[in-house]
Length: 94
Image 1 (cartoon, rainbow, N blue to C red):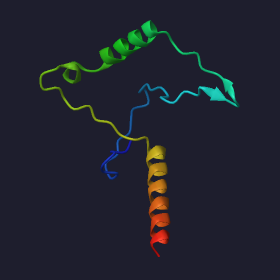
Image 2: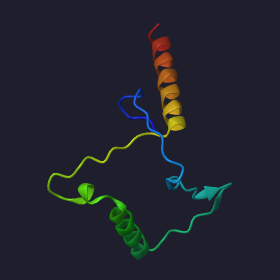
Image 3: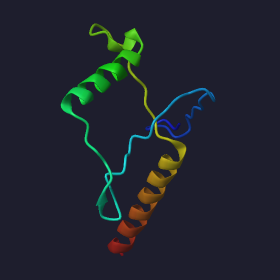
Image 4: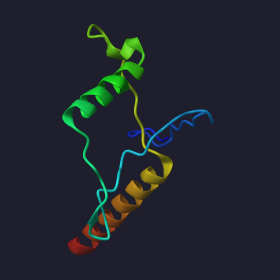
């Protein structure tokens, strides 16, 4: 994982770390492939996910800051797009 504001700060995770893909395909080859959960299922999932957070993040008085980052490949793609756009912008100024 790469820190969003300082790419020199990186973190690796243990092998037993669990994760899930946040991007779920809704359409594939023009066909609907996703079944939207009910509102009750969405609420229950949200409650389960919040319960997984340590209490120091959930408290309302002086909560800890939940640190986030970018997966390394996503960070590299982001940086490549930034470089490409800067190059395109520089060529338009000439």
